[in-house]
Length: 252
Length: 326
Ligand SMILES: Nc1ncnc2c1ncn2[C@@H]1O[C@H](COP(=O)(O)OP(=O)(O)OP(=O)(O)O)[C@@H](O)[C@H]1O
Ligand SMILES: [Mg+2]
Image 1 (cartoon, rainbow over the protein chains, first blue to last red):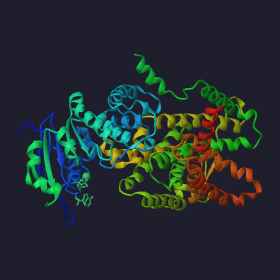
Image 2 (spheres, chains in turn green, brown; image 1 turned 90 degrees about the vertical axis):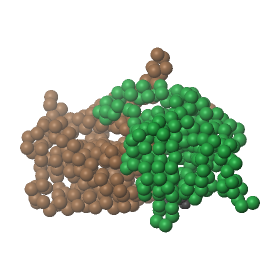
Image 3 (cartoon, rainbow over the protein chains, first blue to last red; image 1 turned 180 degrees about the vertical axis):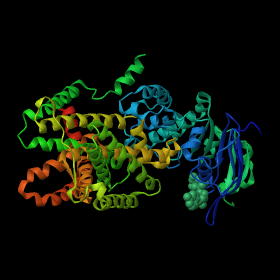
Image 4 (tube, chains in turn green, cyan; image 1 turned 45 degrees about the horizontal axis):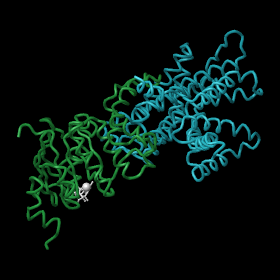
């Protein structure tokens, strides 16, 4: 599998006595959408946190395009082309929607503090064009200058996706992007996630509780249970797996 | 492309014609202050100018970056003494001023390192320790503080036979405008955005590519640079330096100014500086009541108007923008 974009091998993560991840391996090909599903506490978010550098794995390896991500701080991981959203939103609540997205461009700014102090704004204008593209794509025009704190939950979720897109990632990690949304909003967000792949050429790794949404969006699924990979395969294969039925429906 | 022109237009300072005209009028009125303000108040106006620079520095740290510092008097002292020694050695005013800012800025950079690990009350205690230690050093090392006699700083020589207090005010006013303008520009640039992002959610900020250590150290550097410049201007204003001028109550003054003026607001910092200078002056013989009044002001702000004087100012402007429809 030389052509994998992200390759995770034997990833282990322990918190004292708790084993959040007990040797998980998975890989994503460029352009693919992979969904990670599993019950609460099975280690999905922990996997994301390890990839993005927020958690230091106990052992195992993580490579992006053949280069190791281990030991990099989160901002360096992002600079390598990984962006994410958070399960329980982490937005900059006192900034406007526009500024939240502009912050996603931060790592692409040519930084010159003296020019900034003298109000040279060429960089702002340059990056603004990119951000406007995302605003238009995610239908955020109406909220551009609103403070994020005052926006509805559905809008906030969209802003987070937009902010991650603004970093121009190769790999986008979405942690439960449709949880807490109305049925209609779920439809919209699913559509956007589908479109992102084509329009921005991004590979998507997705955590999703909702099996229906996950199987519609992803070509492949990885099922986790209690820190271990239970199985993986196409959505049809995965849904027939007895372990998955047990994990999702209980022991009859 | 007109879109690009649009973005550029949006980034301009004081965009609305009415606001811009009023601002120009205000700035002009203040520029000719020496010719219309009652005598005795001109010196206080100079004091507001110099203090406002330091309060802006403190606000960049507390208000914008969410990093607490109770050690501002330490940076103030470093700026003041660096400036004093350079001036005595014959270094020209502008060079000494910048050097004082850089000296305090570097001290701030070093003090910033604990902030990479410490948060909230722990950082407050660490910076308080720094402030106290700096005070002790200046109080006890004679070659730094000039011993019992203190440090006398050569006075400014006004050109064209202008009265000295007029010259000091005009000079301080211009310096104040430069530093205030730069602060407005910084907080509305990528720098300010990164500071606020780190304040609002450090995890999200670093996950979006903001280097936490670099940003926090930068916040400390800029903040203490401003404070150092303020200290230098204070040294020139006082003409004579003694360590007593830089004890903990001076740090508290900055804190009061930021809270009363309004967190994360440049206008607020200026209001706050005016508050801590003018209120004691207005109280006159009731000066003993100043600490009580400051304490009450902080409490009322925290309870009734968390955005401080800047918040009231914002509401007033909104009122008039919506007027007569309200
Ligand atoms: N910072 C932490 N400290 C201690 N334990 C943790 C930490 N983060 C995660 N865990 C533990 O690791 C396990 C996996 O948690 P994780 O959040 O990864 O699950 P998840 O699959 O994302 O669950 P959910 O579907 O509820 O989001 C849980 O037992 C959790 O308590
Ligand atoms: Mg989770």
